[in-house]
Amino acid sequence: MTISTHVLDAQRGRPAAGMAVRLERDGEPVAEGHTGDDGRITGWPSDTAGVYRLVFDTGAVAPFFPEVVLTFRVTEPGEHHHVPLLLSPFAYSTYRGS
Image (cartoon, rainbow, N blue to C red; front, top):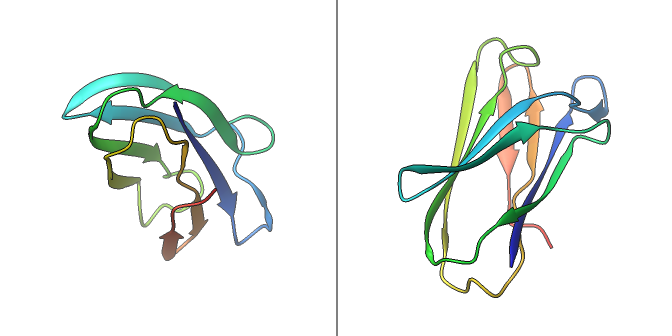
């Protein structure tokens, strides 16, 4: 299936457009790209079980956190995995979305 993400800039109340994001599986790069105008990246592969990492280049939005790494496990490769990031200058949060 696929992995998607959505980055929201909580300070501005807007999507974080143009942010560089890298997807890794079991320590190896799988895909990379930039969030669109809506702050989203969709359609990255998750066809293999394993430990995945989304690495966000957050320095332009949150200089205190130049990089945010979200690590999660895919045990059901047939499921879609949506991993959003809510970002502000001194905090961030995430969850498994739908």
